Amino acid sequence: SDGERGQCIELNEYFVSLMKTSPTFALVTPPSLALTVFRVVADPAALGLSGSLSLDALNGLNRVFYARVSARGEIFLTQTQLNDVFCVRLAVGAERTRKEHIDRAWTLIREEAEGAVQEWAEKVNGIHQK
Image 1 (tube, rainbow, N blue to C red):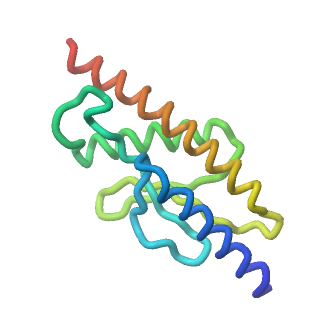
Image 2: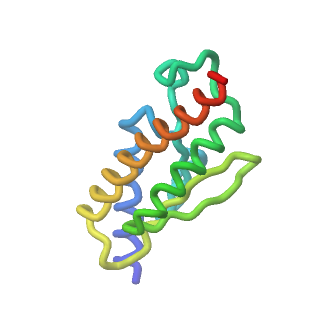
Image 3: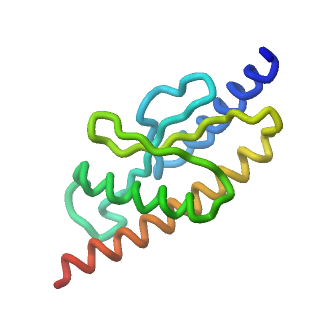
């Protein structure tokens, strides 16, 4: 129904507003109705790397992030490639979805992004140290 669709759009806008508070994430496309397309962006300096991260590096990081979230099995994200950019999608679709579900998803996404950045940085730094 229109009411349910409106609620999904509102919840998606709420999710986007949370995402915009964090420097760890970037929207890849403007939010569309109940769909958000985003990716993890890491601060290279915080990882002990110089310069900016290449597209390949960011794609690798986001693959690690996507695998980590998927492995938890608590929220369902999908993946896509847009102009060679590996992106993650969150769709707010279930009529039973409430604000607390979005809060929970956001917490989980933040936790796994943090873990992914560390896991990925260890791999990358490991390569550089050989």
